[in-house]
Length: 600
Image (cartoon, rainbow, N blue to C red; front, top):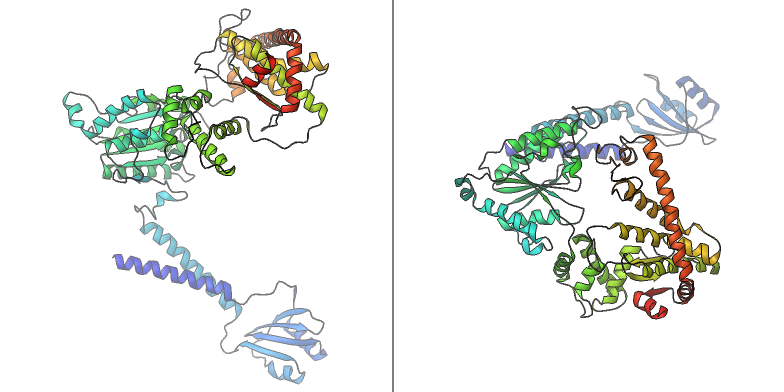
């Protein structure tokens, strides 16, 4: 049977090759314009001596007039053409003998028949291959791309030693690993082994790495697939792929099935177009049935990852399907230090690089961000001819990632002065406010989309924002425009991003945090109501027009109040702003220590 299948495949490939060769080598008409003549008109042109040469293809005749124009005609049945051509001394050539009757139409017919055979053969092999992963009708279009990592593959195996910065979560999943290794101990006491674990967190925090580490510690196969790999335009394909996935998992049990970005598959049903009958919802229904169909001792654990848990269907999240929901947070300073130590392995790093200092200046970053930071620093070191990574390289990489690449812009002297005073206003306001992050660097070197930047970094991680912290940050944002207004006597468009960010902070104070005395302790935002509404619509969902107007009026009033505070800081510290701005025009970039030395 196997030999017959192979023979059929080879025959199919041979027919395909013949078809291609015919298309390549079959006679082709030239692209030039060809006149079609009746046979009687052709004989008249021959008798007049206008014909230069002809080529005969059976009953089809192609030729050229003496003026260079081409023509075609068809010979009448039984007419002897050779004598008249010889009589008028016309060059002629017989491509096919008249007796053979193998004309161009015959070739076209043969090609059409061969094409039909190829199509039928392709459909036959698709149907015969049903149930096989390579030719399955379920896999029309993009394949599901299920990847299998075996626990014996040391090169791809991950363990908890490769996961840093999430110790509490690691302790939680250690029990899951133990249940995979020895499920009997849990079943004897009456505990149900978890069927599914949902990993929730921002992009880059290490959800996929944690899933692979669980599989590596448990010593079981790891089947991974993307949520988007199930959804197709053909009806029934997605549900078929779900069945294929869990059939494959049962063959490899005990094992771990990991569905990455499950929100592409598990969105709430009935919330989008197509009602409850579209292909995506049918695929989700099949997944729900498959997860419910496990026996208690099936030894199959389903892991899934998402950064959008708010849009997942409730039926998917209930106990019995995903029994645990584990939030993977962004690492704190200790976690970032541990992650940096993992990523520093294999890199040649100078003693000037203190990883704890790098962890301190990278607040709010993820594990992927930190890995990218050290890699970018290594690239900079190589590009500048150093044999190891210095702290200078790390700082350059940090600035490049945070603020963008320096741009070579030819900025006029007047505009450079405006930029310098603008950034000096931000820097002095940062130094003169009590609750904002400390100043780290001020620069008038264009980077990314900004013409200058004033950078502040936290001393320690901050998880809550006090009202005073928000207000001081708003004042700092408005101090750049205030410096232009007070010291230069004019304003420019350079504060557009500052105004946007300040307005957003004031709006959140009123709308989300209840920090305004006039509006009171209320949260007017309805953004978490329906995830399928646009952000602008969701924000004002259920809010009256009068309330919206009142909020907008209050935002404008607070903006004026905070701008007045910023102008007061600039007026009181006018000399310091001027001194810092003039120094920036010369040095272009100053660190916090240099600013302190200059102003002291």
